[in-house]
Length: 378
Image 1 (cartoon, one colour):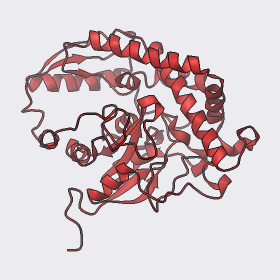
Image 2 (cartoon, one colour):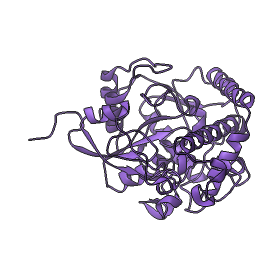
Image 3 (tube, helix red, strand yellow):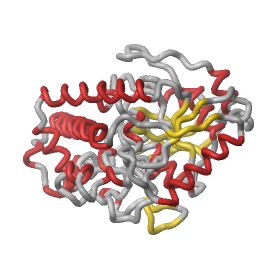
Image 4 (cartoon, helix red, strand yellow):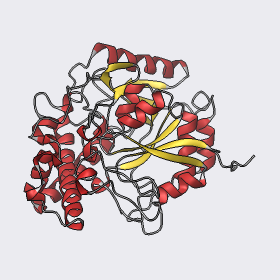
């Protein structure tokens, strides 16, 4: 009788340990540097706008879910926590990243819905690994303020991991929309549309869609046969519902999508580390070797080495890819593709042990071969 009457009345809720401001829920960013090396995790005196909206929807944030250090990994195997985040369906495998803790918590039944964030797949990869619904909202749709304007040059945004389209849609209806001062406010979503999509028969009753279908890598090479068949099964189901499905030509290759994305990620990681060190009287060049994981040290060095001109060039390349994709896919209402090129990885495969972060992401054994698709949606 004492519970509020919002759409998520009294539902327990986890926030990702990646710095979303929340009173009473400090964050260590998945890092020893942001945690015990500076006397404890980062605290806030006020909620960010997104957390305020979660509370207004009567979700009850009570803790933080695990994230890789600074959220720059597709698997949540974080030394600061002392152990990896395991996949509830098979403990030898990764729950994904960077919202791997949220994915494991929802899939394992700890909570029904959890906050997550995504810059190059960090909501969608855990959703794929853990059998959940993971939507990355469109750029500038979700509030980032007041502490931030945009993250990762607009690539990163926040939402939830959930067990149903219904819960994801209702959470979006409760939280979407620019906050005051947002740099690029997106149009306000019509809440009634989201509620209709959340209905059990929402897709079945949708207008006939023209769907472009992808079941190979961006270059056309084959992906794991089990993943390809799962994607084809979805395509067959959509056809049975009356939608038109046809192969889609992508118009781009993986490297031209991923290389500028990864370089921008390193710049933002470096900027975050340097700002934190300044605010705490630390010298980034004099930190102890175990303050950061080897891969994060590599990201710091790569971000510091990138010139301002190269950074701007990366943004120009984002635009080139976006224009190419828009022209190639303009006749489709929806493009259907896998999230990962393989089933969930074994733990250890993508631990942040490689001190060359660019090689870790883009090299012959890099994450790009496991997750070649999600950054394209940016």
